[in-house]
Image 1 (cartoon, one colour):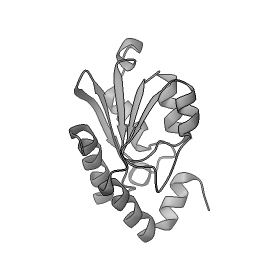
Image 2 (spheres, helix red, strand yellow):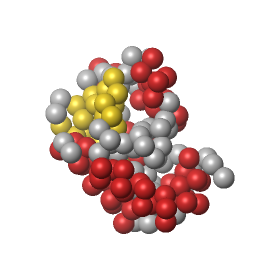
Image 3 (cartoon, rainbow, N blue to C red):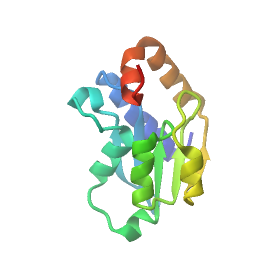
Length: 146
């Protein structure tokens, strides 16, 4: 696991330890983490605070040029909402820890010119598998399932 994906994984573990959904994300520009976050839907009673959204929020206002030099790391394949935010800001590359337990609209994101790197990291997979098995109702709520 590379340093930046490890940082996203650490964020996911923070979310788990707070009683939330263990998904983490970091935004990197020119080799430096400028934003980090984790899924806080449960902790904050939020409808939209997925890890990538929390990460982008914590990065603060950036210029279009900064976004176009960035890489978004996420422990899990970004959902439609988070993929849309990455497309809106023209983030050129997303590194995904795993897409075995959930897969967002990866083909669509790629069709829009975004490079996706799928790590299929065993630690990221195990973290989500354990969470889904022990908290299926929270997981289904997070992905809009019943």
